[in-house]
Length: 236
Image (cartoon, rainbow, N blue to C red):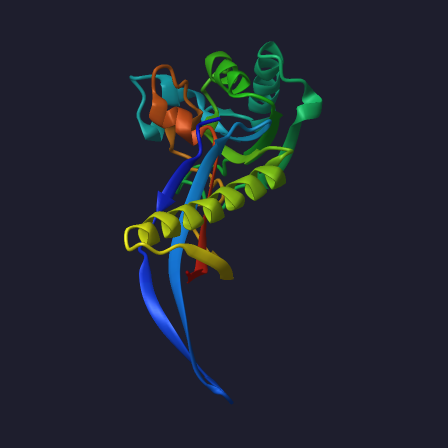
């Protein structure tokens, strides 16, 4: 888990004038936005594998599309895949069928049945072992469907707390530069950010490929949580 990064944004001053029976009261405050992020290691990985019937002649360099006549049935492809997954250490009870069917066919050719399987994995080491073991023939695509962590709620609370601390720290050193201090908190607003959840990558992504010495791919193999907090503090 990477060290939490504190990212701070624009700060500005304003005045609020309140009308009261006894006169006018000026409330001076500083408003800041603090953010924090953390990378969480997943303890559950949902790997999606799409399989589809294919023509045996596809793998013959001397054959053209018009010569494709020998269709490999989906049952054979699925059985071969499950056997390969067993060799990679993935039992049948961690394999589920998500979708069956297809929506188009080549003109003049038979309909090709497809299936989508979902695997429940514990580590990316298992993902890499699967990639190294399975036969690619009949595999239409592989992608990560979801990353989970059983303690994700606690990590979210931690990041939000750090974001608020970052906002207070920023307010403190900005006010110190003008010989002022941070007073009581006036308001706290959690900002909507697009980076507070992991999102699946496109099927063509290399996220499921081995990531030896590739920190960019390593980052995609983690759940990144990022939150922003806007806070107002009185100026003393």
